[in-house]
Amino acid sequence: MILDQILISKQKNENQSYSQDKNSEKPLRSVIKALSWRLIGTIDTLVVSYFITGELLLASSIASVDFLTKLVLYFVHERIWNKVTWGK
Image (tube, rainbow, N blue to C red; front, top):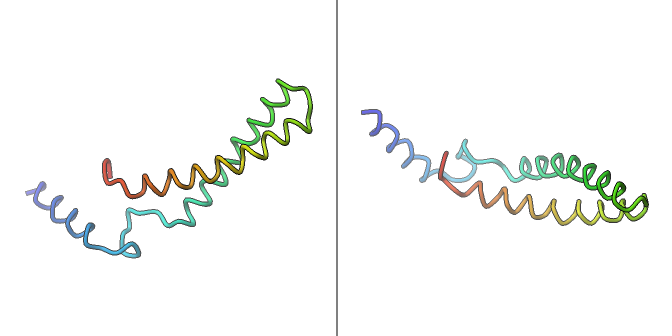
């Protein structure tokens, strides 16, 4: 009985459009999550880079490049995982 309800619910979810799917994150949420996580990661990169190089300008350059590349990679990663139904 419970298994039947789960299967019926899953079939309904598969037939829903993106706007009706309550289990899916909107792209804007993924962007905000990516920005907040990259801020934390960039501060970490800045501190580690400064510790290694001893130069604030070089550490800032490394952290800036790191911020941009990993922001894009994280967003793409989130959007791909949002389409994976395993574990939902």
